[in-house]
Length: 288
Image (cartoon, rainbow, N blue to C red; front, side, top):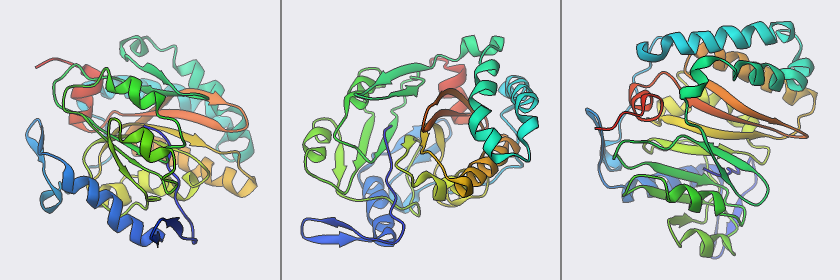
């Protein structure tokens, strides 16, 4: 749960070599998967890379147990942003207001969203009450692991941390105190089990389609139960990309988003209301 830096066309150098976007995608996530123990999530077993789960795309419905809450949130948000359906600049400037208003819905009291701080920002996460281990992926460590170290204290025993950053100085020393470190920038073509992620550093715009139903995360068998995203200040073209992303996320009926922080950049926390494992572990939060 930290930041991701995705290269566009240039390579990211490492001592002894360089990694392009394509080669990084074939190195980092398979490297994680090869080290994962088998994690049993309900009736679905996530095993090592040879047996990674392939996601079957659904028809775009939230889990029936939380359908009412999700639809209430979605209707609330749509009422507050319909004015900006054709206005990308207006949505960028005003989305946070609608999100804040919809956080006053009664069901929000049952979402135990906690704060985990590092030096200059706050990440959000709902700790599970179940005993199944979690997998946390840090994409772009940024010389700061305070949030991960705080999160480690509340996760189930056996939870794993995997971090990637092309700048190994400091980052490797910090991250290997509690997790696995990889000196890579990260592409999005490989598979790993359920993760929490924060996306930032400007590469998030090219990643937007990955989160859509049928996108590359689904194609790669990657389920995100919750993730943080930081969207860096956009020019007009990127405001249009952000506008398309928000309305496509709403159409997908998978993620609701909360805890907006609006400044030069925007931060949002996303929670999966569609995947039955995610709902059981983080929304219902029932012990076994």
